Image (cartoon, rainbow, N blue to C red; front, side, top):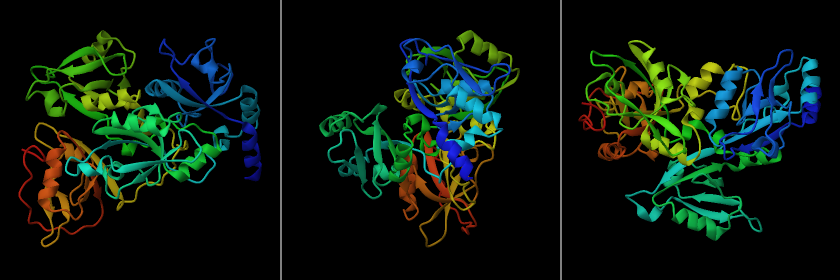
Length: 462
């Protein structure tokens, strides 16, 4: 192990943060070459983003946004770079060093500083909304600056306030606000930016321990590295079976927040397959049958759907979610965990190395209301305030979102409800609209079979 650590210190891996140029590219080509190992960077544009970020011809690509890609298929790595939006963090190694290490039959990825460490948490991208019922709380945090340092801000949280409920860790370092780095901000500039945010603000933050880890290794922290479990919007995988009158939607190509063209689902007809599957008016189409449609023309996407026959699987993001990711210059595909899990080898580790959740650990379930509501009911134990999930409809939004019979309800959209009254829990659900995040505790719970009145149609089901 000592020998590996010494070799690892000599690797001198470079962490390069690239921002797309006016032409919408990062200024390099990623290749696999006959007789050579690894993913190779070639054809660097003179004066382009890659060259400006100290990348060199022949560099080997090891990580994309902190995720190891050493053993990943070329096409999947290219897709990950595209999904990163306007910015991407690449970990690369000099060609000569890479070839010397691989000649010794050593795993380069295991020698990277980012892989040889105690577990640390990923940064968090948190959408904080002011509490309408308690406006005095504001966003639920105050800002203090590191003395004698420009752009170094930390957050002090109000207990159970909007920021804490949105997932901001205590004492977090503030890195970005609404997609813009605050590293060069003064305190007055930051306060103006916060005031201009209105009733909601998106912050990129990292806890103090993780910040120290990244800084020690000179690893830039970007929104693309954010912990996916804490994000307010998630891509939805929907399966459609064609009916007598087709799928019941219109696909339109429209310009969206990232400044490029996207494919949007419009004129969703009531009662037809698209609506039954959970498609909402204005959803943006991301993938068809597991294939990203990024870069495809409208006619190519239509052809892809038609060639699927009588059924098709879509990956979509809501209109609000598309606006959120666009404001961050990110693709929602970047955080779609199922796709990553299917394609990434088990041996490859990510930037968090968090342990697998135990059966009794809290589970965050994301639901999008279908034509019949959210597809579950609530129940409680007599003489107690704890609320449980019951009557989960198979194949409904609750089931697809991960709810299980007997789950103990802990939070609704970040609000703690474990000791709240039934009426207040219902109110929180009514305020959620079409998208709802439920934090539940899964384990062996005993809950009474006497159910409370069914939550209104708009919340649970019809």
